[in-house]
Image (tube, rainbow, N blue to C red; front, side, top):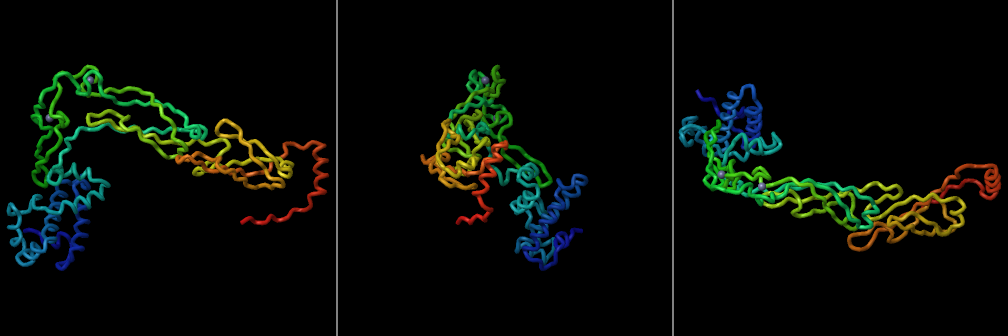
Length: 371
Ligand SMILES: [Zn+2]
Ligand SMILES: [Zn+2]
C-alpha cells in the first residue's frame, strides 16, 4: 500500500506551494543519505519517497490527478509507470537545499554523479596555478621605489620534452583521442550518463609512450627562481601587483604571481593613507624661542621644519607635500606633533634655574579648545 503524498510530506491537503516547498526542504535534509550513514538504505528510500511526493504535489496538473484518482491517477505520468529519478524535475531546488546544507555544490555533484545538468565536460587544458607572495617593505623602500628581490619555487615547462611529457605520443586508447569519456553512473536515482574528462590523458587525447626522463611525464619541472620587482610608488599595506604569466606552468598557460605588500612598522613614522605622522619631543626653551629643527627623513636626508615662536605642546605642524608619494605624482602631507621633551636629570644647577623660572610662569590655566 503506497503512502499518501500529503502524509509523506506532513502537510495538509490544501497546502500552498510555499508550504510544500518548506516541508520538502526539511525532509530532504532529514533523509539525505549522507546525513544518515548508519541506515543509508532506508534513508535513500525515504529520500526518494519525499522527492516523489514533491514532484507530484508541485505540479498543479499532477496534483489534481492525484487528488482525484490517487496514486493510480499519477502513475501513468511517470515514464516507467512508477517514479524514478528520471521523472524528477526539481534538481535545482535540491541543489539549493543540499548546496546550502553542505556549503557548496561539490558534494552534490559527487553524490549525484550526473551529467544530466552538467554535460559541459571540462576538456580545456589546465592552466598553471598562481603564486601568492607577501612582500614586507619599509616606508623608506616605498618612498625610494626600491628594487626588491624574492625567491619563489615554481613549476616551469620541462625543457627536455617541451611540456609534452615524453618523446612519442600516441592516441589515448581510453577515449580514442576525444579527450572525453562517457561513464554510466548507477546511483539510487537511476543510471546517469555523464561525460567527463578522460582520466588517462587528462583531456589531451594523446598519451605518452615513452615518458620524459627529466619530468617523469608530467611536462613540468620545479625550479627556484629569483624575481626582481620595483616597488610601486607609494604602495600601501594590503595592495598588490600581478605579474602576469610568471606563476606556475600549466599546459593551458602560466599562472600569475600575486605580490601583496605588507608595510613594516616604522620606528618613528606612522602612515595613514598618504599622510605621515611624527611625534617630536622638543625642549621647553625651544618651544618658547622657536626656530628651525631637524627631523629624520625617509629618503635618507634629514628634513628641516620650523617651530613657530611661542609654541606649546601638544601642537601640530603641517608640512605640505612631505608625506608619502602618491601614484599620481603628488604626495601627502607630514604632520609633526610637538611634545615636550622631558628633562633627563636634574642637577643642583638645574633645580636653581627651575626655581627661578617658576617666578615667571604663574599658575596653571585651562587651555582654550581649538576649532
Ligand atoms: Zn619532460
Ligand atoms: Zn584519453
